[in-house]
Length: 67
Image (cartoon, rainbow, N blue to C red):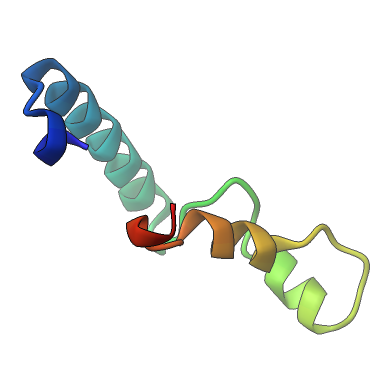
């Protein structure tokens, strides 16, 4: 977003968010960071009741050209 706006305030805020998320990943220690635990993938693949984690991952990881 900064590349299209060149808004330095926006860049600073975005950098702060990315740094905070990176700190969370470091604290967790696995690199995984999501709104739900990674165990939900295992439950889904074992055909156990679970909310759809792959749907969310797919939507979050869409290329910007698809938005």
